[in-house]
Structures are given as structure tokens and as C-alpha cells.
Length: 211
Image (cartoon, rainbow, N blue to C red; front, side, top):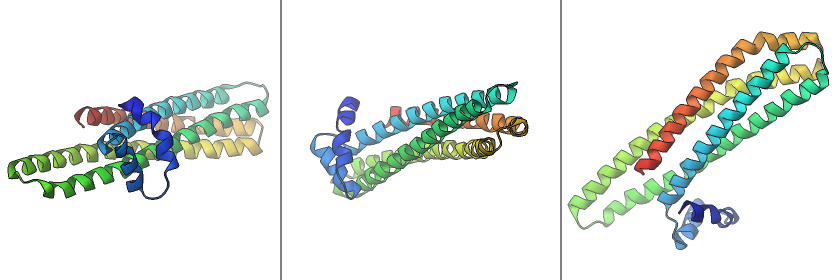
């Protein structure tokens, strides 16, 4: 099913307008909102994993820059700036994936709630409503973890952005000293980011298993 969803991504992207049009088009080829949500959560977990790896790589470049003794400062700036830009791109991808989850989840839960009225069997309706409540609860926990993970990227990006800009306009030993002063801050922030990412990924995997 996931392969079908991936193959249908071109159709999904080509459709413009409200989300309901997109979901109806996917449902017409056998892909339900639940399947799209599962795939979106998996994609977000993968994006967070890749982001965590990229931020760890950026931290290593930051350390290497701080520890450098001599060498071409222009090359040093270029390497650090590339790591920052890659980190920024990964952060943007995580944010986009989380937005996708929220869009399809809103559509799924709204449809589920409305269709409770279609039951003629009261016991089945109650059971479906209970499952809806449970699913929403797990979804809320997952999204809290994802939001924390997304927010944890900002402090790291902010420090990186400031230091890269300072290094860009001050390619000298003073700029390297400035980086050294911020090393502890960025190490702590990156550790917190990776911890938050791992917690979010765990929540995502657990949510998928119960969806």
C-alpha cells in the first residue's frame, strides 16, 4: 500500500484547490485517508531522523572549525555555511511533513466523526466512537512530541545562523574565537534536539502500529 501511495504522489501534487479534492482523487484509486495519514507520519519520522543526522554533522563541522589552527578561513566558512544550509533545509522539510500530517488528520477525524451518525447499530457506533477518541488521544501525544522536536531546531539554527554570518564578514581569528565561545551552547542545544527527535520518532512509530 505504501508503494501505491508513493506512486500516487504525482497525482496528489498536481491536484490544486482544497484538500478534500485531493483526498477524493486518492480514494477513487483505493487510497483512504487512513493510508495517507500512515504514510505521512512515516515520512515525517524519516524526515526527523535525517534532520537529526544533519544537525549532528553540522555540530561536528562547528567543532572542527573551532579547533582549526591555521588554514584557509574562506574554505572554513564555505564548509560551515553548507552545513548550516543543509540543516535549514532539513528543518523546513520536517515542518512541511508535520503540516501534511495535520491536514490529512483533520480530514480523517472530521469524516470519522460525521460518519458516526450513519450507524444503525448503537453498539457499533459507540465502539467506533471509543476508537476515535483513543486514536485522537494517541495522535495528540504524537503531535506534541513532533512539535517539541520541530521547536528544538530553532535554537540550533539561530546560533548557527549568527555565527555563520559573523564568520562571513570577519574571516579572522576573532571570528573563530566567537565560534569557540558558542560551542557549549550549540552542543547542548543539539543534544536536546536529537533527544526530542528520537522521542518524536518513537511516538510516530507507535502511532503507525496502532492506526
